[in-house]
Amino acid sequence: MKTITKLRLLFILMLLIALGSAGAAVWSARQAAFHIERMSLAHEVYEAHLALSSHTYQLFKQYGDALIIGDRDKGKGEAELTGKIRADIDRIRGLIGAEIDLVGTEEVEELETVSEIEKTLENLIETLDRVSEPTTFDDQFSSNWGELSRILDDDIDRDFHSLVEEMLAEEQEEVDETREIVDRELTFHRTLIVILVATAVLTLMVCLWLLQQLISRPVDRLLTGIRRFSDGDLDKPIALEGRDEFAEISRTLDLMAKRLSERTEGLASQNAELEQAVAERTERLERLLDDMKRADAGRRRMLADVSHELRTPLTIIRGEAEIALRGKEKSADTYREALIKAREAADHTSHLVDDLLFIARKESGHARLRIDDLDLKPLLGDLALHAGITTVLTTDLDKAPMRGDADRLRQAVLILLENARQYGGNHITLRLDHSPAGYRIAVEDDGPGMSDAEKESAFERFFRGSNAAERYADGVGLGLPVARSIIEAHGGSTALEDRPGGGLLAIISLPRQRPLKAVS
Image (cartoon, rainbow, N blue to C red; front, side, top):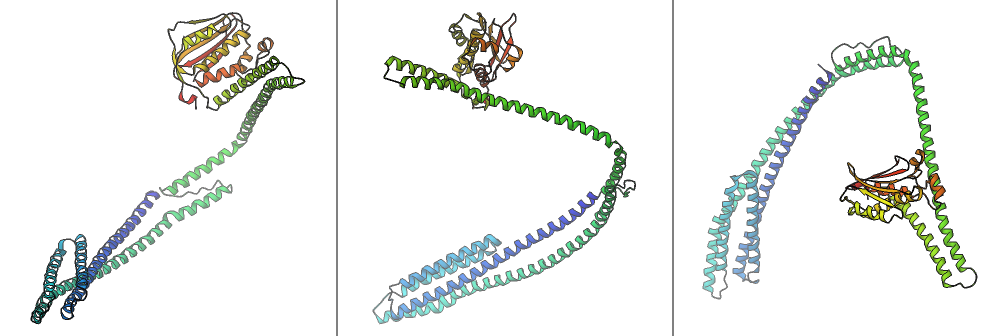
């Protein structure tokens, strides 16, 4: 049998003993709580009857005093005592109701007795009220006094007191009976606890002995063998016998020691392989470090380019302001010309900052677009008409509906058209076609085109190809990065390819529906 199976059986046995002990304790606690509550209710009922008896005695004495010496408080004392008596009766009823809820209908007879006491009291109070009415005649007083004597002797002593005494005797008997039951239950519970404790102690001792035989001795032998293995003595096996887990561990360790001895001879070659792997990993890390250095250099270059591009319009603004303010008063046209040049420089700076901000927001996933339903065909047709050079829109589509930011899309296509006009040839073609995901927009020119290296870097910020630097000195190299950011914010893509027959082909791919994650 497996050791784990033996341990499970021992655990189940101890669990059953623990559950039995817990169940017995819970049952004992519930029984004790039940009898304690029953005894407490019996005591409360007994005390309520004593209070009722005391208040009725005070009431009868109050009536007697009123008949002998006169009713000085005009019935106020009798009314107060009558209220207390009725409260006592209500309390007794409530306590008896609680007893009925606790033990069942065996206490219903007590409610009948209480009703009888209440009825007797009400009759006595009515009679005493009638007898104690004020009178000025001696014969009437003698008659009332005789009636009071009869009530005290017959109705109170014989009827009422006998009912109260009977009720008190029943409650005392119930208290005594409950006490006897509690004593018997306590004796039984003590005996049961002693038996359970003795059983638990005996079971624990047996379990400890079994654990010693099943676990401690095999573990000691295993530890001794493992220490030998750790000291390098792999020739002497542990050799535990049996079918349990420790025997399996022993056989496994012996087999492991044998294989370890066999594999020691191959450690040299493995070390060589490890050194080679470390060298390759080091080379890879060095390449990553070079990439990080290049990225940092690009960041520094971008900051330098931004500073350079911002410095030029700021210099213009400051120079125009100095010219306008220097020397004597100038004409309004001179001031107007200076302000116009300053405004143009400020507009250039604003566009530059706006383009950089849009690119940065797009890269952080927070590009701001105003999405609406639009049709690409009339949008592109309008751009082709006002591109400033002979531009032809070619399409087979009747309409091209989609959702997007019309102003930003117009800006992106206009950037490609402007690039084709500035750096391409004299013939520009704007094409709109279907694509598997949505639409494909292509801008073709017959210019000198771009090298493969320039096409790879064309969408980097502030990059300008050799053709652009020669033919158009005012550019800053943000057009294509802004266009790509706008298209990617719509869930699309941009690419530059060589045009068959010469020239450049700028391609925009747009989906009909912009993905939700593209815009914050």
